[in-house]
Length: 159
Image 1 (cartoon, rainbow, N blue to C red):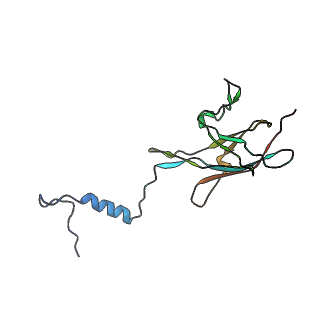
Image 2 (cartoon, helix red, strand yellow):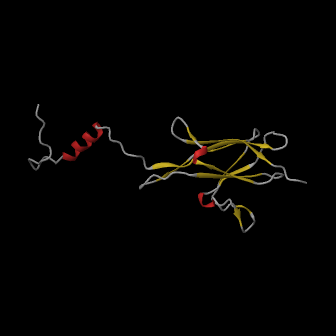
Image 3 (cartoon, rainbow, N blue to C red):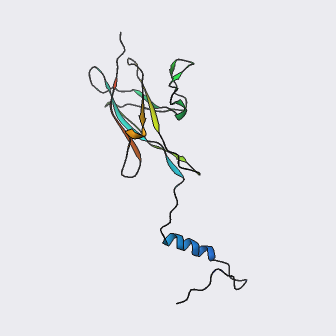
């Protein structure tokens, strides 16, 4: 069987469908394009416990600091942690917290996350900031980056 020459236009009523053949060939070869969104921050799960009693601490404000706050965790205007543009969650009665992963649009190149900074604040406890690096993460079955923070100890303030 001979395939017709689809690259030439033999009559004005037929359109040139040569590019369609290129698409068919690319699909047949298994060619695939990369997505436009990539993970820019991992999912983070953990539990906050009291350093003395080792019991869960409820209502701790846990903030994922913005990427531009990586090395600027103190806000000079009030000498406290900078929380502008930060995502926040509170721990439950079991002391657990979780942040979902974040995806970003990347038309050119593939952005990646390198570190995620978390801040912990609770009345009666010292503030705490921790950084997790890419090396601290694993990937879930679906490819989502995941940091299992484990148990984080909060120090009680001295009276």
